Image (cartoon, rainbow, N blue to C red; front, side, top):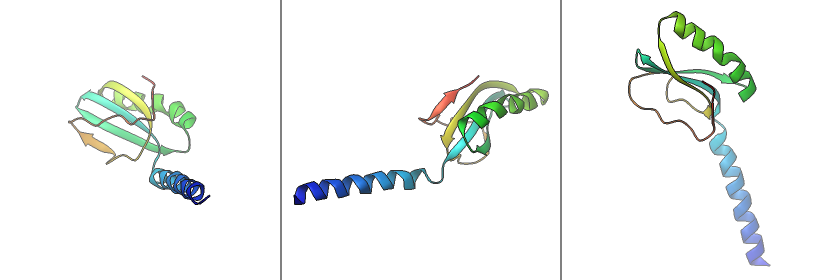
Length: 99
């Protein structure tokens, strides 16, 4: 019986720790441009559907500024910063390729 209680307690602890780690995350749009070489984050959004709906407007704004958009994703993440010049920024595990 003690082993069962320990197992259940361990499971609940892991379950709640997972949600604590997710607390700072939200849905963000991530747009990568080649010219200039930047990564832009737009958000946060309440859910993926809202972010997907807003994505074309951000792409259009960047195109109006003559930026060459190379990729767009909707991600569940916490961006390290909103604008990243050059370099590589990994795509999160919870992403939806939209462009």
